[in-house]
Amino acid sequence: MNYWLMKSEPDAFSLENLKAKPTSWDGVRNYQARNHMKSMKQGDQVFFYHSSCKDIGIVGIAQVIKESYPDHTAWNPKSDYFDARSSPENPLWYMVDIEFVREFSHTMTLSSLKESPELANMNLLKRGNRLSVMPITEEEWNIITLKSQYL
View 1: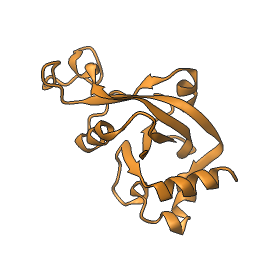
View 2: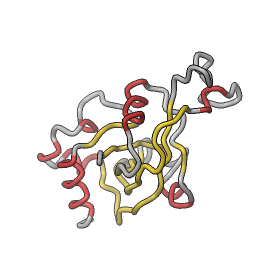
View 3: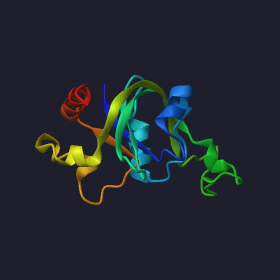
View 4: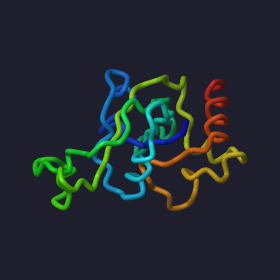
Protein backbone atom coordinates (compact mmCIF):
# COMPACT_ATOMS: atom_id res chain seq x y z
CA MET A 1 0.00 0.00 0.00
CA ASN A 2 1.08 3.55 -0.71
CA TYR A 3 0.16 6.79 1.01
CA TRP A 4 -0.70 10.13 -0.55
CA LEU A 5 -1.82 13.67 0.19
CA MET A 6 -4.36 15.39 -2.06
CA LYS A 7 -5.14 19.08 -1.76
CA SER A 8 -8.43 20.75 -2.49
CA GLU A 9 -9.84 24.18 -1.86
CA PRO A 10 -12.94 23.58 0.27
CA ASP A 11 -14.87 26.22 -1.70
CA ALA A 12 -14.35 24.05 -4.81
CA PHE A 13 -14.53 20.56 -3.24
CA SER A 14 -14.46 19.85 0.47
CA LEU A 15 -14.29 16.79 2.68
CA GLU A 16 -18.02 17.29 3.23
CA ASN A 17 -18.53 16.87 -0.54
CA LEU A 18 -16.49 13.67 -0.46
CA LYS A 19 -18.48 12.36 2.51
CA ALA A 20 -21.63 12.70 0.39
CA LYS A 21 -20.31 10.50 -2.44
CA PRO A 22 -17.11 9.11 -3.95
CA THR A 23 -15.55 11.33 -6.59
CA SER A 24 -13.29 11.38 -9.61
CA TRP A 25 -10.21 13.48 -8.83
CA ASP A 26 -10.15 15.33 -12.15
CA GLY A 27 -8.66 18.57 -13.36
CA VAL A 28 -5.06 17.96 -12.28
CA ARG A 29 -2.89 19.79 -14.82
CA ASN A 30 0.59 19.34 -13.44
CA TYR A 31 2.72 16.53 -14.91
CA GLN A 32 4.34 15.53 -11.63
CA ALA A 33 0.99 15.38 -9.80
CA ARG A 34 -0.47 13.45 -12.76
CA ASN A 35 2.38 10.95 -12.57
CA HIS A 36 1.71 10.47 -8.86
CA MET A 37 -1.93 9.69 -9.65
CA LYS A 38 -0.86 7.22 -12.34
CA SER A 39 1.09 5.39 -9.59
CA MET A 40 -1.90 5.12 -7.26
CA LYS A 41 -3.40 1.70 -6.62
CA GLN A 42 -6.82 0.68 -5.39
CA GLY A 43 -6.79 0.71 -1.58
CA ASP A 44 -4.02 3.31 -1.27
CA GLN A 45 -4.70 5.72 1.60
CA VAL A 46 -4.96 9.49 1.10
CA PHE A 47 -4.76 12.44 3.45
CA PHE A 48 -7.42 14.96 2.39
CA TYR A 49 -5.96 18.45 2.73
CA HIS A 50 -7.87 21.76 2.63
CA SER A 51 -5.88 24.61 1.09
CA SER A 52 -6.56 28.31 0.44
CA CYS A 53 -8.87 28.62 3.43
CA LYS A 54 -8.89 29.78 7.05
CA ASP A 55 -7.79 26.43 8.55
CA ILE A 56 -5.25 25.05 6.09
CA GLY A 57 -4.34 21.44 6.79
CA ILE A 58 -5.29 17.77 6.79
CA VAL A 59 -8.96 17.27 7.58
CA GLY A 60 -9.43 13.57 7.01
CA ILE A 61 -8.64 10.37 5.18
CA ALA A 62 -9.83 8.98 1.86
CA GLN A 63 -8.85 5.95 -0.15
CA VAL A 64 -8.34 5.20 -3.82
CA ILE A 65 -11.21 3.10 -5.17
CA LYS A 66 -10.37 3.26 -8.88
CA GLU A 67 -6.87 3.40 -10.35
CA SER A 68 -5.87 6.01 -12.91
CA TYR A 69 -7.77 6.44 -16.15
CA PRO A 70 -7.87 9.26 -18.73
CA ASP A 71 -9.33 12.55 -17.48
CA HIS A 72 -12.12 13.19 -19.98
CA THR A 73 -12.58 16.78 -18.76
CA ALA A 74 -9.51 17.65 -20.84
CA TRP A 75 -11.46 16.83 -24.02
CA ASN A 76 -14.48 19.04 -23.30
CA PRO A 77 -14.05 22.59 -24.67
CA LYS A 78 -16.68 23.80 -22.15
CA SER A 79 -14.73 22.43 -19.18
CA ASP A 80 -12.48 24.61 -17.02
CA TYR A 81 -9.92 21.83 -17.46
CA PHE A 82 -9.99 21.62 -21.27
CA ASP A 83 -6.64 20.96 -22.94
CA ALA A 84 -6.67 20.91 -26.75
CA ARG A 85 -3.46 18.83 -26.77
CA SER A 86 -5.22 15.91 -25.09
CA SER A 87 -7.60 13.52 -26.86
CA PRO A 88 -9.21 10.11 -26.23
CA GLU A 89 -6.63 8.61 -28.59
CA ASN A 90 -3.72 10.38 -26.86
CA PRO A 91 -4.72 11.36 -23.31
CA LEU A 92 -2.33 13.63 -21.46
CA TRP A 93 -4.17 13.84 -18.16
CA TYR A 94 -5.40 11.18 -15.76
CA MET A 95 -7.61 10.94 -12.70
CA VAL A 96 -8.42 8.46 -9.95
CA ASP A 97 -11.56 7.87 -7.94
CA ILE A 98 -11.48 8.27 -4.17
CA GLU A 99 -13.96 7.77 -1.34
CA PHE A 100 -14.29 9.08 2.20
CA VAL A 101 -12.81 7.00 5.04
CA ARG A 102 -12.84 9.22 8.13
CA GLU A 103 -12.80 12.82 9.29
CA PHE A 104 -10.36 14.20 11.84
CA SER A 105 -11.99 15.75 14.91
CA HIS A 106 -9.93 18.90 14.22
CA THR A 107 -7.81 20.06 11.32
CA MET A 108 -4.17 18.95 11.50
CA THR A 109 -2.99 22.43 10.57
CA LEU A 110 -0.03 23.21 8.38
CA SER A 111 1.58 25.06 11.28
CA SER A 112 1.22 22.03 13.58
CA LEU A 113 2.81 19.82 10.92
CA LYS A 114 5.71 22.28 10.64
CA GLU A 115 6.18 22.16 14.43
CA SER A 116 6.75 18.38 14.34
CA PRO A 117 10.50 17.71 13.98
CA GLU A 118 9.83 14.13 12.86
CA LEU A 119 8.05 15.52 9.77
CA ALA A 120 10.84 17.91 8.76
CA ASN A 121 11.49 16.02 5.48
CA MET A 122 7.86 15.74 4.46
CA ASN A 123 7.30 16.85 0.84
CA LEU A 124 4.41 19.09 1.87
CA LEU A 125 6.69 21.09 4.15
CA LYS A 126 9.49 21.63 1.65
CA ARG A 127 9.81 25.19 0.41
CA GLY A 128 8.19 25.77 -2.97
CA ASN A 129 6.31 22.46 -3.07
CA ARG A 130 2.83 23.34 -4.22
CA LEU A 131 1.77 20.03 -5.79
CA SER A 132 -1.88 19.11 -5.34
CA VAL A 133 -1.03 15.38 -5.23
CA MET A 134 2.08 14.09 -3.49
CA PRO A 135 3.39 10.91 -1.89
CA ILE A 136 3.59 10.49 1.88
CA THR A 137 5.96 8.00 3.47
CA GLU A 138 4.58 5.25 5.67
CA GLU A 139 6.42 6.78 8.63
CA GLU A 140 4.84 10.22 7.97
CA TRP A 141 1.44 8.53 7.59
CA ASN A 142 1.81 6.76 10.94
CA ILE A 143 2.98 9.90 12.76
CA ILE A 144 0.12 12.01 11.43
CA THR A 145 -2.59 9.41 11.98
CA LEU A 146 -1.36 8.89 15.55
CA LYS A 147 -1.32 12.65 16.22
CA SER A 148 -4.83 12.98 14.71
CA GLN A 149 -6.20 10.74 17.47
CA TYR A 150 -5.21 13.36 20.03
CA LEU A 151 -6.63 16.43 18.30
